[in-house]
Image 1: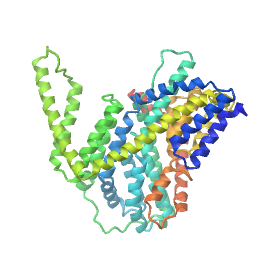
Image 2 (image 1 turned 60 degrees about the vertical axis):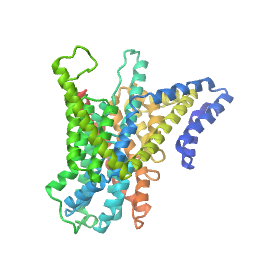
Image 3 (image 1 turned 90 degrees about the vertical axis):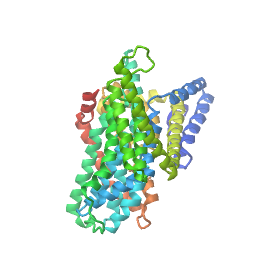
Image 4 (image 1 turned 180 degrees about the vertical axis):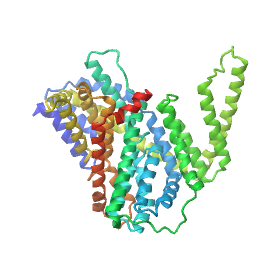
Length: 516
């Protein structure tokens, strides 16, 4: 029995989570219990737990993970300021008269919100409260409407920037370095968040295209499921559409462009996104648009000029040109700071900042507590011999490297029925990723496959988070069974998307190779 403690430990973890205990306490509690059990049975060196302090320090000083709270804040500000509602309303009136038009608008808005917020819960709840009742009034089948809303909301996990991709980049980079050490390479290469963001862009929009094709085909085959909406509201004009779409698009370009262009690190770009979201919120609340435009323009100009002509004002040998440039930069900074101050004051007055910061702290604490507990879990799992067992299982899989990857993808898919993406990312992936990379799989391509697989975990009953979010926001006439039935075709589309990336790796590897 003592030889299989690592397996019993994993089963006990799933059981504790299914019983409803808080996830981070379940992970850490099960780990500590099995650490002492392994020590008592003589199969684990308890001194290994002394590395816990180093793991905590490593987590808190991790430069990659610092970007998570800033990206979460960016999304929370956009959600709490009701920018998502305005976008949904405009796109719904634009496409509503088409067969399946409301479904198309929900997917497109989901993609835009994914690239500007990256928060699944916020997107699903917003669309569940705004778009879903409109779709039901238009005569949409409740299952179809629920499936579209649930799935469009999960795009925030695969279209960058997303917390999943940030965590995955950290995990895969560590796994890649570990694999290189085991191959005897001491001049190891690291993988960046920017590479994973670049790798996920084309697969993310490929999934959007698959959803749109499915909605259009279903509208043709079963027109009664998605009739045109007889909206009483007028169709939006060009200026109204541009006013709703252009600000989020500019924010996306600023954030992703800064990362992919090598101008800023993910953490710096996330802070740019948070400030951009604050300025957009100020405009939405009713602040004078001239203040926002002038302030945003000054900050953009400052970023471009400072990147092209950097100035060190503390130097004593500055030329006249550098002094003049420094003076211009100071003026631009003041203009931008004034716009931020007015936007911040308006957000405080409307209680937007209060709600956004509360949401950010809650989600950030949940993510970091889970990562911290998973660090303790992995220490104990390794101490009980679990790492060697995983490597042995994968090496003995029929089909070699392909068979091992197929087994791991199936394992992650099944675990997605019971566990959250954070738990799978920080507990399971560090165990399976190094052996898979050693077998010859490209780490970037492997990361994208796992990202799509983990995105699917939001849709798989009974514990898919997207299903829970929609259950809380959906009208009472929609049953849980209808929500579950509605996502099944989209789970099939997710598997199709994984299959396409599997057979055409260039979809995920071409852009990062071009940029990096």
